[in-house]
Amino acid sequence: MSLANNFQEKANLIRKWCLISTTEAKSGHPTSCLSAADIMTVLFDKYFKYDLANPLNLFNDRFVLSKGHAAPLLYSLFAIAGAYPPEELKTLRKFGSRFQGHPTPRFIYTEAATGSLGQGLSVAAGLALVAKREKLPYKAFALLGDGELAEGQVWEAGNFCSFHKLNNLIAILDINRLAQSGQTMFGYDLEKYIERFKGLDFETITIDGHNFYEIDKALEKATTNRTDKPIVIIAKTIKGKGVSFLENKEGWHGKALKKDELQKALYELGNIDDNLRFQLKKPESLSLLREIIIGGQSDFHFEKGMELATREIFGKVITRLAGDNENIYALDGDVKNSTFSEDFLKAFPERFIECYIAEQNMVSVAAGLSRLGKIPFVTTFAAFLTRAFDQIRMARISESNLKFVGSHVGVSIGEDGPSQMGLEDIAMFGTLPDTVILQPADAVSTARLVPLMVNHRGFAYMRTLRSKTPVLYDDDQNFHIGGAHILRQSDEDLLVIAASGITVFEALKAADKLQQEGINICVIDCYSINPIDKDTLEECCRKLEDPIIITVEDHFLHGGLGDFVAEAISGKAIRVFKLGVSHISQSGTEEELLADAGIDATAILNKINEISKHKNPAELYHS
Image (cartoon, rainbow, N blue to C red; front, side):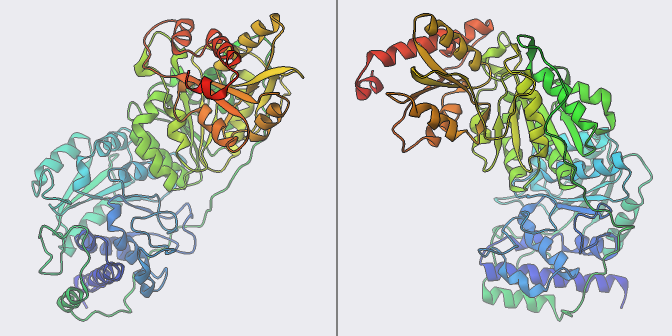
């Protein structure tokens, strides 16, 4: 049998199982799988190096299916590689199956969850960059559909790949002309894609994606790349290739064949040897991920009353911790001199990644790093993380071990105005299951919480302040995820103030003012917003004649600290009143803007006076 015929038979076996699995599921995207079956067959059968027994072998090649709706293609490739019996593919899209509608970590051979289009090249870039920085021999491949090439993130990723000279990255474009609802932006005008990727300084190779000779030569050239450029293979393909009534036909995207249509399609594919298998090349060696746990304390010393910005302390602490943990990486969005991640750059340039002003790409690159055991810290202004929420969401689905640090939170940033104020970030991260949200108020709490982020397995987000704040805590004060600290308390407290970050100091000012009048209130620093310290909140309220909590935060009212507190004590006889930012702010001083937002000490005092004047709770709620 000739090499081309051998490839063709295996490609048709892949097509067969893509069709069978989607028909069994009664849903899926078989035509999107068929167009790429030929080029993926050659890749897996001849060039892809992979140890099936060790998906996290650091010497494995990596393959990212950016066009995640073609998941049956991914699953069929690994079935024919021998990872599991092809018959199991009939569980596609069924509850409990490892073969989800789009790839997720339930499928252990996936590098990242995909399906929200345009993100795969960024993930592959993260994987390729690890290999470049740590001198690992593997290649990173990404299969992109032409529909997703309209996504801006693809071009962010392209810039990133060429800037970092990722010549170990191979992007494969499946140009099959048809998107979900019609023709793609450029159809079969391959010159448009060539121009764009050449403009990004990629080495471009254009092929007929169904000509096995051209496919083989392109992959041979790409895998032996001697330039310092990333490679893109632009493959002209036919959607639904191999089945005449599907080929290049509109109206078949996301549509599974009926049983009779399946039989007709399988007849066209002809007799196929079901015992054919890929012979994956073995990687050069075996090296598995190594987790490094660091101590929970840092050796920084801070004098009480010193004024320091929590963003500045973050930079110092993460740099110190990185000296003990080689897995820590820092990613920046061109604000390193504001987030103080520049401290990390100076100490560990080989583990610092400048992503420039491309936050979507930055998050997905970090997801690629996480797949290989790195602990990426994604740092930028909190406001700018919101533009990457889809990428953050997909990284969470990928079960990535990512840490986010958003600086310049709230109206307290002052004169820069509302476009720079992070006021939605707690709500955003709070929607994602099992995401830790921290907000230190001072230098000591920052220094204690950053190591906890490193050792926490999963998503963690920290808010840091632009302004300097006085040191509240002794150096030996303990902190833990899910904790809080009581800063003021007496046996005669009127109510409880739950604050976080900058508003801790406003709450303390209010408490001091009231104490001069013979009135005591309890003040809690809720440095852990999620999980919230439910026990401390309830314990403080037990001592009150009329249990009331006022939450005060530099965040929009919905989805912030107030909502976490209210949820924690729901069902208890405790009333919660929320003070937060309720309108779009403006430029001004920190003091002016805290007052304008109604979250300064005066606003707290006014709220306490308002509450104390109303004995009837219903009257208060409607006042």
